[in-house]
Amino acid sequence: MRRIDLKKVNVARSNTIRDINRQIILNYVREKGPISRADIAKETDLQRSTVSHIVKELTDFNLIKEVFGESSGGRPPALLTLRSARPVAIGIDLGTVWTTVGCCDLTGRIIEKDEFQTDPDEVRTTDRIIRSARAMMSKHAGQIESIGVSMPALVDSTKKHVLFSPHFMWRDPQIVERLQEATGLPVTVENDANAAALAELWFGRLAIREVRDFIMVFIENGIGTGIVFDGQIYRGTGGVAGEFGHMRIGTDAPIACANGSNECWEAFASERAALARYGANVSNGATAANINFSELIDLAFDGDAAALAALKETAHYIGLGLGNLIQGLSPEAIMVGGTISQAWTLVGEDIIAATDSVVCQGMTGTRILPSTLGNHSALMGAFSLILADKFSSVSI
Image (tube, rainbow, N blue to C red):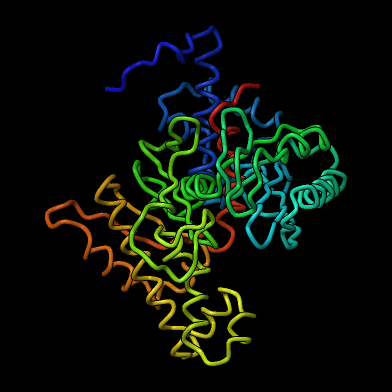
């Protein structure tokens, strides 16, 4: 039984039951739609009149719409589904190499996006993001409600403020504040691994959406981990939990991590580490220096022995880190996200074998799965920051 935190408790008001029922019905439509009013009433034990009244509210608020199912001989049944094709949120994936600005509808479907290289200069990157966000707002006048930002940084999500981005060495950057001032919209920000974990909860495979405890390991130029306990993102004191990318797992890694260490997980198992190994394995250093991680994967699929060897060695170190996470936290599942998930048929067995070599015998098995969200996991995470709040607190 969960202990009540009296410092954070909210007492019930007169409209609490109505808000809860509204939230339940909206989420039934999201998860099981198209669905009829009768089926909602049957599954929730709410009265048909209550369901109909709330459905009308949600319809008037442009959250759901009525569609008609296939007829079995009589009048086609009236079914409820989310209102799609109407942009409601802007998501920003501020990555170490590329930044993507996109807008989505209530289902999380990407309506349009703008992608550009991330400038190491904070001001120039923020200016470019603001221009892109404003263009989308102008195109979809009055429809965009909020903005979510995912980025590789230490973030105080409660204060909606970025503390520090080790990759760019941005200390106390004013990205959120400037974006909010320039657009007039509320802006929510989250660490990219936490955002990707939230995306798995909302848009990932069903096997993960039903898991209460899992870890999202997001591998890019660095490594971030999003921890989900009891269906909620665990942020820790100050909102900076999950920096397992900097746990020590060895010495003399092929690269230094963002903090300058050659001993931590990121230095052994990131995309940069794999590219460094490839460069050391080929004679043409100039060619190796000009490829990115996606191209390295393509080379490996094409039979390039040096590329495959670099991926497999990196996979071994990914697995060692996963083993440490299982030893310490014993989650039901671990999701591996980022571009490496596209090479799972090449390296998945190596990752799992290395993980098994670390985990003590007798421990409950943790499933290790590749993310199905591909390169969009951080962008979908940015969308999730807005949609999760919208679906969890429906007060009209």
